[in-house]
Image (cartoon, rainbow, N blue to C red; front, side, top):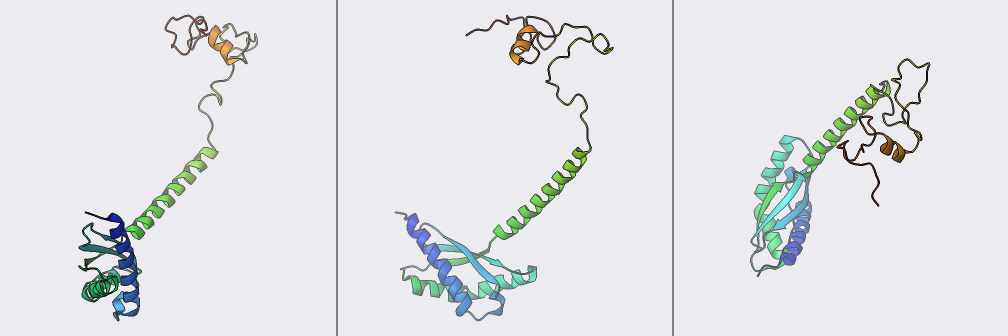
Length: 190
């Protein structure tokens, strides 16, 4: 029978015990910048993985890993003594990748913000390739306008439903934009 709640409680207790003993009992200068972040325990309570972070460069990280490897026996004894369980779990120390991943995500977000700023700067001086509002009302016939093709304007150009009933997307009467001008009737069905 596996009790996951007991495994979680034991993992929290292991974090507390290991962090306290690294800070107060273990006299290794390589462990000065080590922070215990989390622990996981297998459901049978036989193995524990302790996650840690180290402030410093790669040399400090490798020295901390060597210091934790040398202090594993002392720390396991402390866990067994303070928890009082029948079988003391073996301890495996693993460098926590969360801070490195968070730093990488921060770099990616900064790059995305820079790219957005460049796009916004380019868009500030840009103009539309066509008309600013392609969905505006049809133009009304004007004899003086040489670009107007002479088509019939809609009677009520401000009402989009009226425009949909009077002319389709290709300008033919009787087609409806929903059916794509497939020849269906433009009558409304309730």
